Length: 162
Image (cartoon, rainbow, N blue to C red; front, side, top):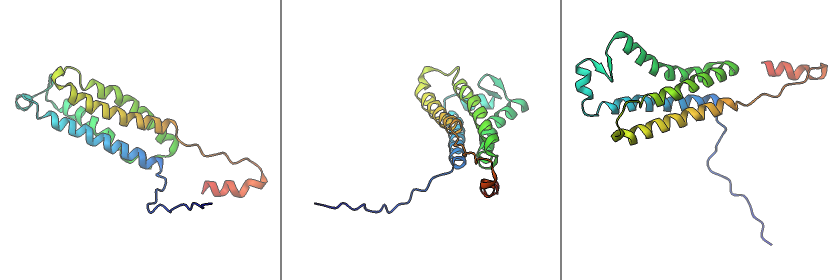
């Protein structure tokens, strides 16, 4: 008869708080989002269009640049908001913003030629996967079990509120 002993794992894998996971996902999304725009500059003709004052089909203007900044600033803010907002507001904010960014990410590929389909498919695919992770994580946000009311649980309720 052999006795098996469990070998201790030399690496600890502590649980990661949901807020940290969300902030990491938004950070990944933001970096990917920025790099896709950066790599887009390497397409033939893009720099010439920029010098001519045109981005895609739009004339470069303060309004366009403000809209472009907002589209990058929102994921950047979500990194901080995911770490600092109270759970209920955090959950709602992540659900709304991630839901709005899925069609926005897909819309960014409209008008592109099929020659660039692999580039946009990969980038948009990863963006949507990150947003789906955010949606799933916030939709299934862990609930804190309610502490029953009564005199015997007064100390438990007071400790939970601290």
